[in-house]
Image 1 (cartoon, rainbow, N blue to C red):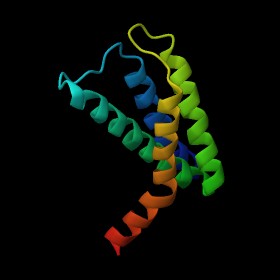
Image 2 (tube, rainbow, N blue to C red):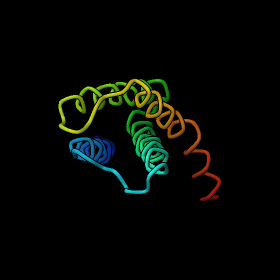
Image 3 (cartoon, helix red, strand yellow):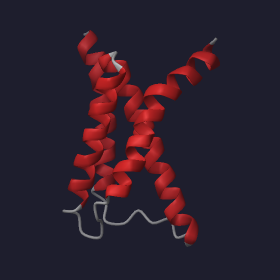
Image 4 (cartoon, rainbow, N blue to C red):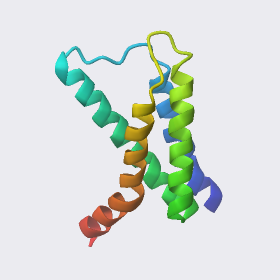
Length: 114
């Protein structure tokens, strides 16, 4: 049961990211703000993934490595989706999100719950 409760949220969240990456167009229609909002969304979704990976693995380096690897695979996946493209810049943004989820989010949650 411990393995299931640790890894099911990771699998579900990674599935959500995969689903979003499978959509041809996620534009907001907000012009210049669109790019900024999408990049913030990238970082936030990967921060959550990083936190969930840390929760499942219990080890920061492993969580970061797994999250960064998933970011690479996500960008490769997007190269096969019409209307999308994989971008190394997005891997960087996603990995920054993972780092925030692994190193910053746990501290913020501990303070909020204290």
